[in-house]
Amino acid sequence: MARTTSPLRRVLAASLTVLATAAATLVATAGPAAAATTPGIDVSRYQGSINWTSVRNAGIEFAFIKATEGTSYKDPNFNANYVNAYNAGVIRGAYHFARPNISAGSTQANYLASNGGAWSADSRTLPAALDLEANPYTGGYCYGLSTTGMRNWVQDFLNTYRSRTGRYAVIYTTTSFWNQCTGSWTGPWANHPLWLARWSSTPGALPAGASVWSFWQYTSTGAVSGISGNVDRNYWNGDRSRLIALANNT
Image 1 (cartoon, rainbow, N blue to C red):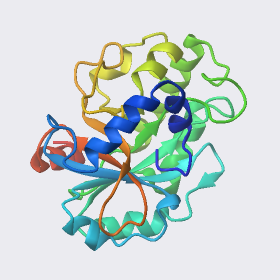
Image 2 (image 1 turned 120 degrees about the horizontal axis):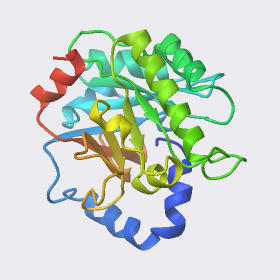
Image 3 (image 1 turned 60 degrees about the vertical axis):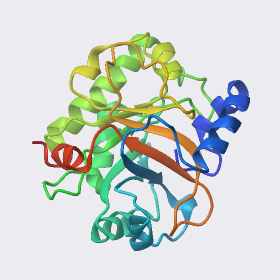
Image 4 (image 1 turned 90 degrees about the vertical axis):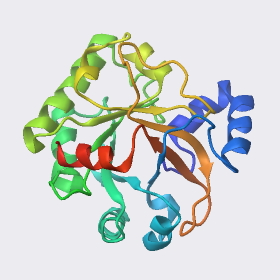
């Protein structure tokens, strides 16, 4: 996600260095050739102060904005980003970086919902995203959880978020992490939109059981007017009207 050296970047760098370099070159110009038509970004405090009017004028339609991590961290730029993105006409959503080995899924879902990640039917607020990726801290790639333990943690988070907001959370993950750490669990994809992380010119294989991606993060080295330095670039798999329909739960 949008970090100086995100957990996902550290994991992918070891195995996909050549591919990531090629993808970065591609998206610096026209982006993936077969991509959907609705562009977006995801950001956190590492992007610094953002000029959201410039971002919107550059054609960015949506943004996922880091809100929380674990049970004690709230991104210091979240409030400004969340409000300013909305005011600029950018469809926004919050995201929570999961720490499955430090507290229950329900605890972290409640923390997210109580710190900016709740939902409102205003045509510009997406259901929040659960950022579930390789552990950047101590405790092992899958946070020391068994596949059953990971499934239970994720389900606990999803159930609690839905209870708090009435919405199915988006799930951000990589195919490799999901298949390894949940044991190729197919359960959530009937209702929860997939936000796929794969830095390439194509989405590639999806997590087990997922028939389609809703969002695709295709590079970590994008450039957008109004943001200094690199930013994660994404696509929504549809047009703006369908994105607004997701925002409004219609």
